[in-house]
Length: 384
Image (cartoon, rainbow, N blue to C red; front, side, top):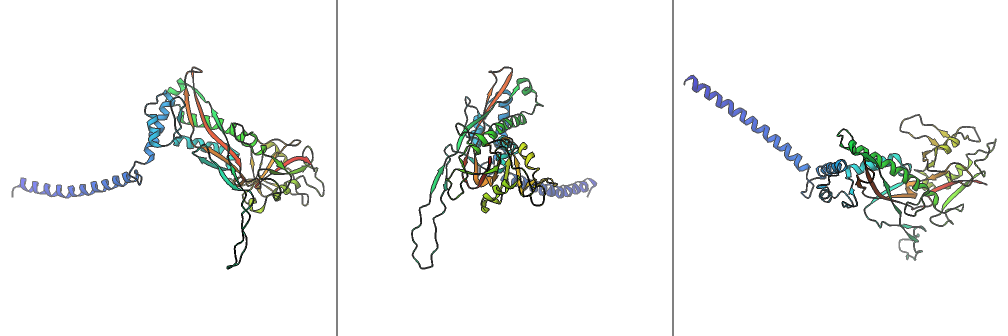
């Protein structure tokens, strides 16, 4: 065998070995790619929402920067990520952006942090509640089952309203690719929504807006005799504030009455709600027996400070201390007060009304209802 033949034989052997190894590597790569592709498809064989959401987001941001809406409506329909849109009424904000707006609202809104929040997709959401207790009784194994009283049911409909924000930017800033239009929209919309709905959650009259906690009827009567939908209040003991501390009396006594006015079943998970001015007064109160402060400042990050053992949520929409005011609420807000979010924020781009500014008229629907008037109590500034 010549040297040339030996070289060719050795090369063929080398080629065969390395071709086999390359085939093995390619097989592994194909397997990885196949697994990745399968993960991107849902159970029904349709492509997962991640890529579609990103495409929707990209199309929406192009619309925000340039007003170009090519394909945006089709992407919304395909992705099923909005409550519907049209060029004249604005476009639905993509889920990936809308979810960030909701997170910002949660951070900015004390009521959203302590109340139950329900997202709905229908304009006629209703909740059925039992206002008179369950109809039941005790019997033996073989005894007849006598009739029980008919349950007292009520249908609660949230007080809904459309909230809007109208952030603006110049077209020049929108043309600047370093300008973060996504964060601009998220923060501008969330800040304005939080201001408007925050006030409505406390003092809204329920006319084209949510009905606020402090606009429901109030009475001093106990749970057993008070009508459903009426909140019980306790008196501070003084017509303009709190009673003067003495050896036997503490201005905090009314807060203790407030706490134990809430049934034990609801006290777990209860919080105080008041504004910063009220908290600055309350935090100085001391126990009448041993003179210890009733306020416990948290020394651990992430752990709330407590008042008489319960967390305090500060909401600047709560009224200041004053005659006949209700500056403090206490109770299990998740059991008592519900916020209803109609899913989807819509944005209308307006580049003509206020040139050179481009406005983003943004709307969403939100509502509230009091679903358990026994779970929350109020403190009223009133003489005993």
